[in-house]
Length: 618
Image (cartoon, rainbow, N blue to C red; front, side):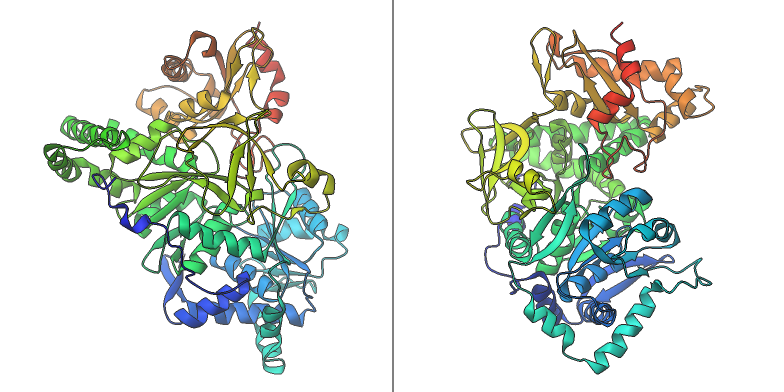
């Protein structure tokens, strides 16, 4: 696909980049080999602070020795309750170096969820980010008899705290320095004693159906998968990534932290989740992995900016994206691109496309990676038209992340690509469910052997719960979750995710849940994009006093109706949405309707808003 981009640096890398059979072994080998090279960058008080491999190693050693000084034993669990930051990575690597099990907790989790996760994992040491997260821990610690110490990263606002169970990260590092002088080889002995088959990390599923389950991954699977990632999309020390997704999620933990550790890629941490659009323009990553919602927001931002542009700018963009689209269509169809069109694309880049890429912050990107949820094929084509290969990967917590991946030279929008080289993927002949088998598949669910038995069959196949198809080239396509397929009262099988993805392509829609099982027609619950809809209302003099009044205004209802009608044109009559209802409450990750990754919980939404759903069928 070199007509649009150069895929040469996305070719698989099969040799071992950094030796080591466990995560801490790879880290310490990498720190020794890379020394004064930069690994981590984090913005503090408006200034980017760098962490070399040697500085990182010093901090990890001090924290690790600090854990040993607190009596932390091999195989004990320590948890991290924090937003994504350098301290998260330092703590994680220190826990693993001490021979422990590292568990992550979403910073948006409520106190009761923190209690459940610490109790279920038998957490003995809890790292928390700041006073807000500490409050949650203090609220439930009386019910956590195994919890010995709470370590706080940021002590701002806690200077006068006098609690024998709570210490700062700085104090822990000081304890580690003292312990290291007395026991200089203790941590290295723990690293050497760590075995590939031993439990390394717990990743709790987001719990869209019931209580979160702790997926257990050993060192062997993590190392195997990280090496496998380089056979999918190669990275090296010249690359820069942005680290901003939750580190307790498999995508950022494996594809961000551990993959960057293995390859030497520089990890840049955003200031906070709200500053991602601003930080990405500063960082300009060469490799950018994000969830579809991020890609949708970037697209929406460009569309909103375009509406405010001059007529000449709009015409320049329209012509330029048209050229990019024509080339993308030819490349996707594996047809040659005429020289005249290539020349036009160079002009299009100067006229508009380079500016669009800079506006987003992807002007240095070699490729973009999307995963964790379905994405609209039209959105993939839009990024391709900008000259950016967008590669969709698919996997799950239980498969250590990506199990299929799109090759850079054979992109098929709407597909999740063929099986990766490091695992097998097939369809269940009876149900169409996608099954995965390989050394990357997890050990099972902590304390839930019956759930493990339901998920991994006797032949070692992981039952993913996703239904799909596979074409003659081995490219898989997700059609839906097994539990989400809708069968209407008329007997028509509907795949709701296809409709929902089309709706989310709108700059005015954040998420959508299509309803219709055993019903006469389809309806949808829509969560609007607050920022873009508020701007639309202000630009069009639509009066509103709060979020609820915004969703109920006739003009906003008409705006969303137009988006529904746009989507309906792409589907057969029996698959079209007849009515919609706008969620009239602002939701955040703390609300029960949303997962920590900001996806609406289908089952809970249908239960909670049953009255509104029934009203759409009267």
